[in-house]
Image 1 (cartoon, helix red, strand yellow):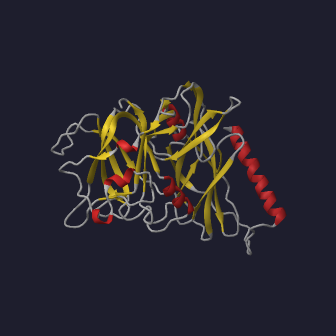
Image 2: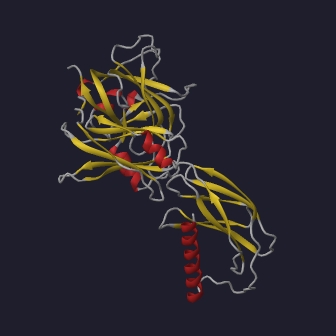
Image 3: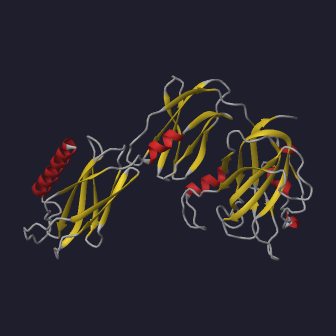
Length: 396
């Protein structure tokens, strides 16, 4: 702790010296009187940080309170809170431990109070907890991992693969605050190779690296010529068939073509579902859905949906008996812009199609039920222009 306090004091002295020499950010009027100190300090620790509350000094020209702290032996951070609030947050700590924090009250003349040194003791940061939860296994065309993120902290999960020289380099990364999930990298031959993964946070703290030699599983694009609509009595009613919106166009390989479109109006409400036959039993690895062009991330395009599967012909009464939930999904718009506003990233993502993975170990399936829970336009119908599936066919 003494070493960290020394680092903080040295950094404060250097900053003050630079400001005086350069005459930067100096107030027009300086009264030269230091404000009083904060008091009644209380600390509430959390994963990777702490919230510090306090009583403000009774200075009429008080401007803000600043906390200065070292998250390691080289990095100094600060957090500020205006004189209108009585708490601030310090974060970015890469491990559990006791860390000194120096609190200063600052007035409108730039005068700092005497320091108040408090000690925070953050609990284990999210990136370390996520790292401990990782399970890395072989997957179709590559490798996949599952993770837990109970505190829902913002983390980056970085996948590494061996390059032509055998060096591990970044292949892909997932930035997420989801409570759990899985993440895959694909596109590799079915030969043994090294994969690695580590977790980092937005302050560049990072975990150790898991390294495994894995052999990717075989996968192929399923033959769309075998796909067919499988009509069940509870399925959504087709719409606009006279205009060419028929199910078979959803697997004709033309992403710009007319789409599978359900009827709307007349009291129809979500959720709605349709059923299709892949023509072959397969261990499914992933699928891609393309939005209807001209309406990307809008209108009737699916936003939240569930994929159900069955290896045997489903119950003809249209119930969900015998169906297995293969995954629940959400279409994520890269830009995060409101519906109706798209940038270049959104357009590019829609052109590629939105790809989703099936969880590792999912059961074999031939019949697929697509159950849409919500569309981008919150409508009572849904459409998509093309769908593709990948996996390992079990039969011909």
